Image (cartoon, rainbow, N blue to C red; front, side, top):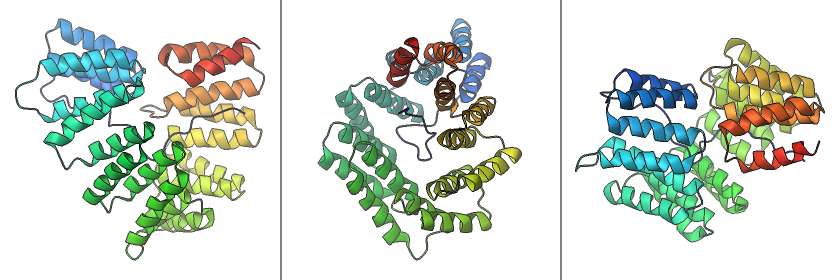
Length: 347
């Protein structure tokens, strides 16, 4: 069974990889713009030019670190962030906290959870009301198998931001991924109980979706759509609810109507998965390729990988091999892709 990559609706272990180029100059700004477009190799060339032009070294090294994270080269990213921090002042600024978050994620991705926790400890020592730090540290504790510590951090995050229903969903999602599904559902139920009287249809719909009550999810998300909320997340969750209820045709119509007005990588990715599930590999490939043509696409990696699987499933192995070679140049540390590549080599 092929394992696909789904563009996440909830943001897990991810910080906003964007600007913060205050005081930056031409090459630095171009590099950050390239990151915004997910053009990481091009970004590195701009940052190298910025170094040669003696632009702000702290922000340039920060940019290089973020670009290396984009290509999953976390060891190189760490070195860049460490150098950037060395050029800071005595008083930590927002950009320094920002880099410590990135460094914690790098340690986590490199299989160094204790070092990641140390970073979050340092952030919380200076910013004890950081919801993100509590949440992210809880994720790492859960990865280490320490449910008690993870729960304590998740509860601290909720206490600071109790009406953020996306936070409850994020907590459920990481617990579900680590096979604490029933424990994770408790957070969804708590959120539902807390906000039942005043909760908007959109929030009810997405909570029901993750509780796998797809009928109620569909009903409330349709209400949200009728109320004017036609966002990417509403369409994705609504379409997936229809898929789960066995109405893939209507789900595909929702996706198609959305991209006809606003081409979107995540919607095209889900459209491709929907076609693939029905055995229509040709339309699946077409959807993934259309998704890859969308600029500023946060789902580029998922689309590229799923495109490869679709070509492979349609027995177009040579195309799949060529695409996989290109994919591994961009994402050399993707273990799932390496395993898939080993299989492709045998075809």
